[in-house]
Length: 98
Figure 1 (cartoon, rainbow, N blue to C red):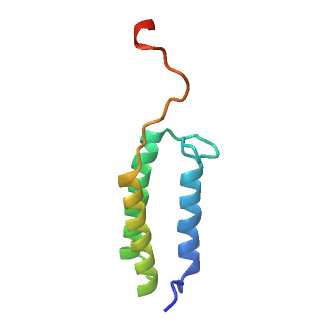
Figure 2: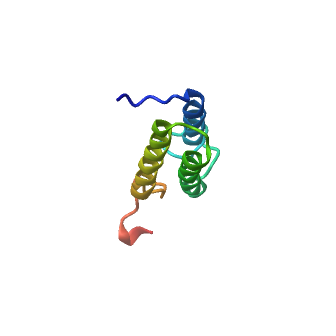
Figure 3: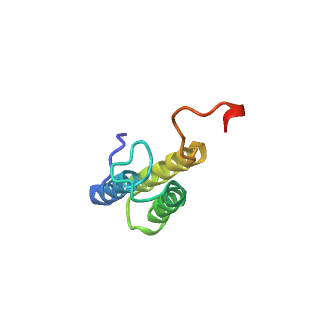
């Protein structure tokens, strides 16, 4: 049993949307950085819910439903384990010299 969908357009549309979502985030891997990290956090959860909604509502086969649910679960794990706080790099002043 291969992990291929009988509906490649559905999976392709979700894949392109996920790539755009990742590219516009203000993170180290973001290409355009249009969306702040706090908004991107909510976007991750909205995207995971959209994947679950697609698995439930779209007229697709069982394999595609499983793939959509699996990607939603993986995205939820990534969202739960991601630290969305922006790191500040550089030198900091010693305690007595602020």
